[in-house]
Amino acid sequence: MKNRREFIKTTAAGALVLGSQSKLGLAAVLDQKAPHADASKSKVVVARDAALHDSSGQLNEKHVQDLLDRAIASYTGRDHPVDAWKRIVPVDKVIGLKVNGLGGKGISTHAALVMAVCERLQQAGVKPGNIIIWDRSGRDIQACGLTISTDPSRIRCYGSDVAGYEDQPVEFGTAKNVKLAKILSRDCDMVIGLPILKDHELAGVTFAMKNMYGVVQKPFELHAGGCNPSVADLNCIQTIRDKVRFTIGDAMSSVYNGGPGFHPEYLWQPNALIVGEDRVAVDHTAWQMIERQRAEVKMPTLEAAGRPARYIATAADADHKLGTNDPQRMHLLEI
Amino acid sequence: MIRSNRWMLPVWLSVFAALIGMAVAVTVTTGCKKKAVDPFPASGAVTGWEKTSETRVFAAKDLWQYIDGDAEQYTAAGVVSTSTSDYKYQGQLEATVDVHTMGDAAGAGKILAAGQGKDAKTVQLGDAGVAYAQSVIFRKGPYLVRIVAYESTPDAPQALLALAHGVEAKL
Image (cartoon, rainbow over all chains, first blue to last red; front, top):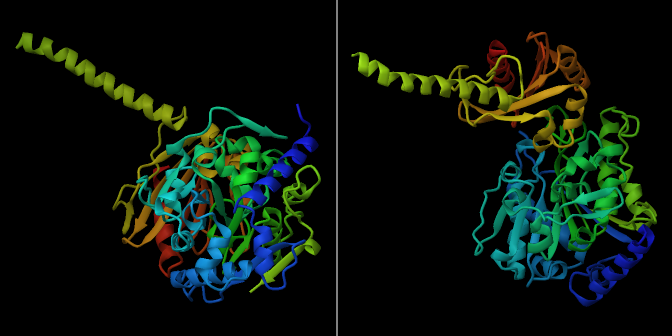
């Protein structure tokens, strides 16, 4: 039985081989073309649009595609959206879009963002039947404002309640007896995470890495200790580590307290997308966004509130090496 | 006549058994050993409000399926079961009503106190209640009720309050 360090070494080497041999290895390609690129740093783009919501709080859906295009253009260094997307996804593969509808209708990944991503994927050459939008259940999908569809000739959109979970469990560290969603393990070649930014009663913050709780059969078994180190451990499971390669984080609206459920009294509109490959850097950036909002409304930090997002540092440690939580090792682009 | 009454006996027994079965089913489904309570007003029972979904019921052990991540605080406070249903006001404003059946009034009080923000307005509902622009939360005995609207509209606060009174009356 390999110990954790040996396992990390092996999987990291495997990921490098995969990266060098397939289009799924993004960083090197992207950093060659992006402005002010520094290949040694993890790039994170925060794209904002102050007019994303109108004065009554309604989302201007027409702005979403433009915001996504700006974010992806900035990330890839390619101005033309189709060209940019071809740099991100292998167009001949099955691409999964893991949304998050757990919080219900008020605080789930926005359908307008999902549709904008689908639009660009198809323009880049991904066949509609090779796009799968998914989450835990049909209810979660519908909470995002999406319609269930299993027609293989069209964009598919359904939950693991339909597709099921693997019988054979996998594990890493505290993430034991994990049964992965078959949509992840069997159907998708690459997954783009589309989480929505939220405060989290146990973990502190839920975004890119915590979104993976929606790919396992019994997420509640990973809640001990403020979800630390379980979030990091879960993301180290090889299938997740290898397939979930990019995050387009929905920070268009968020809850800075009371999450992960919908608490409209703590609803806030950052009007932003947070984009990146490094899931730790993306989560660190998202966490800081929540902390700034809490400070602005004179709420205590998440640490003071008793729910520090410790799993982010854990994910960056030597046992996990999922990315960096060190701002000095990030290339943060705010546009 | 005597013969026909004898024929009717099995029919009446069957009907009686079915009614008993339904009552047991409700009790089992709710996971509540006390009297079965349906706290959800029917469409039109509260002016302007229509019930738009079936009621879903989650036992404490299954609550994560509905509010994963939030479930622990309810479990710690002694939740027995949670029932939820969707509503719509005047065909526009969508809302969800959650009724948490706690083990006792103290559990309901604990959840209500923990969730109060600085913008909370005290309202006369049940044993205690607060309201925000898009939500109303109150407790009555072992019940903790949370009603949330998905939009902020000028008439949302009053409409939510009316629906809350409708729920309270059924508890």
